[in-house]
Length: 446
Ligand SMILES: NC(=O)c1ccc[n+]([C@@H]2O[C@H](COP(=O)([O-])OP(=O)(O)OC[C@H]3O[C@@H](n4cnc5c(N)ncnc54)[C@H](O)[C@@H]3O)[C@@H](O)[C@H]2O)c1
Image 1 (spheres, rainbow, N blue to C red):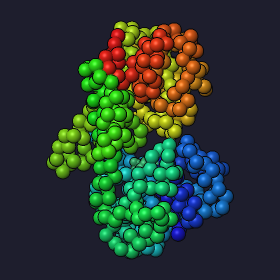
Image 2: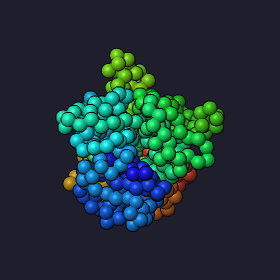
Image 3: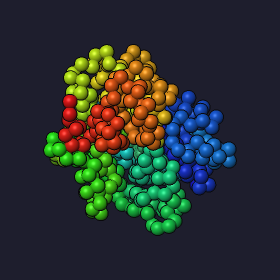
């Protein structure tokens, strides 16, 4: 099939590449010329395991092309996917300017029937807005061309995006038109072989399904963080509690890891957007407001522990910080908890020597000019003249460091572990002061 993908970010690039991998003829359109140039050279602008090789092989085979030419994009595909960003507006609502910009471009250039597919995460009712924007621009040209707008939200995870897309748990197709549904069914058939994963529904239900899924997962994280904060105050260990509740199959182990709050490009904005949508209908989303409030508070717990340990005297101190990405296996630092930690420490007069296996470049773009911030090339380069170690992202290379070397290098043997990567008893045995999240009274000590 001929497919056009508008937007070559984490979602558009993975989706377009995986469709090409199945033999489709895919043209990816992005407004960022630098991105398109680097993709045409076979270099991918993001870190995503397995993606670069797949982009290169499909590009070489001629099934995956990149352009900034919107008109060419509209002309190319029978299916026009919109996979552009939908960041938060100041009031928490989703910024639809990119989505509607693509919709208008489609109306400007469309000369034959098309199926427009919303792949971006968009509030309920957006397909209607996309339809209106296409219709309006068509009418301005005096043109009348048949088209449908389908909702096909994406559930891939950064860090495992290719395998998630190739082996999806479900494929949501929201449309009330049988011909559009049949086209999408055919496109997804190669991803739908071992069991039927396609779920058909109306457009609005599909739009809401995506938000409901992300808010459900964010809720588990915030609730677990609330249990962790309670565990600290009650002298319980949240890691034991986690094992105790996760073993119940009704609860399970996914998304019940306590930490420094959820981040990334999706959960924070999607929780806010659904609260906003609820508000617009006159409904107060009390649980979701709580999820968001707990998360905001949680982002500050690590710095609270650091401040308490040093009795408020952080000025002039420097900390090694391991992990900048919002989770392992990605270079994405959008709304990452590391940013709160860095910004709070710097505002208190402390310095940070940071390392991340993939997100260094992204962090340099944000903090490169910040005098208190030093980006290190290797993990152990962070350990020069520092007062303590802070773990923010649980990359594998942080799991088993040489603790004796660490103890030698740190001015004071203290570790603030925002992901409960280490065993508190083991570290106490080695003479470290150790602060985890929700790990009994020791987490509050100092
Ligand atoms: N990142 C994820 O893990 C994830 C997962 C599921 C769903 N989503 C949703 O998918 C959407 C895209 O997310 P992302 O992380 O890929 O965003 P991104 O910011 O990485 O990429 C968006 C891309 O769209 C391009 N763009 C903007 N306007 C354009 C236009 N008019 N025409 C063509 N390209 C344009 C930008 O230059 C950018 O390259 C969002 O709605 C997001 O919520 C993201």
